[in-house]
Length: 281
Image 1 (spheres, one colour):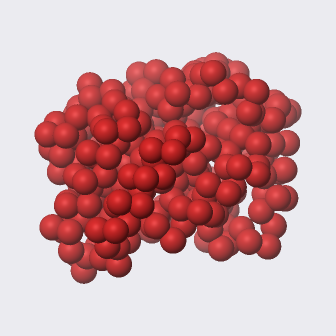
Image 2 (image 1 turned 180 degrees about the vertical axis):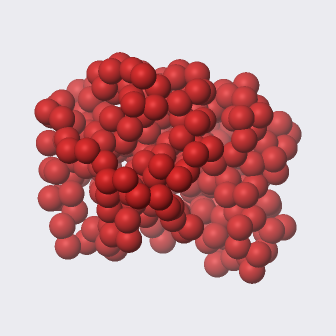
């Protein structure tokens, strides 16, 4: 069974066919869906999805590109909701130095505050670290948490090792499917398998065969096939290992009854195109 460790199932792009998106994913063998919020306005929707859709696990946090519109009261609301239980992580949180128009100091302040909440509630974190890996690592060394997942990892081998040493798993998804993404493909193929998890970031970061279109969690099986090819492993080995990794880091090991998905037969091959995507949540 596959676990999509990062998708925005609450996004408006899914409003017209959310149930069908989940069904397609389950038919493709995806049984677990980790859905992180990006701002306070989204907390209720993420929690409702987790309540009503089997296999959906919520994470709550304020995204670094949403902190300019956030308030201190949002952190208090987050603290309260985390205290009620049911969340598997604090996220999506972190730093984004790709977008210079955003207030870096405010990002840092909200990031540290949310790391402190994660520590208080003994929860892992789901990290956004675009062009900010070293700054995120520095914050994690100052404010230690129980680990988590670095979403859409695109740093160096050295940075990967530093995150792993701090107890983090590294997320790989759509970018890995582009033949031109040589560094990411090399990392996905060479990092310790026990440090790797799979994600879609749907509806964002579509794979090579859906470039320019909407991403979906049903693509997870072909992501696993891509990873298996890069590592010279069987598909079953990759699915088993990445799912165990996700369960271990997010504390899902005792929640197997929540997963309705089942394995599906293989999918079709990848298109051979270079490229990537610049924006992701």
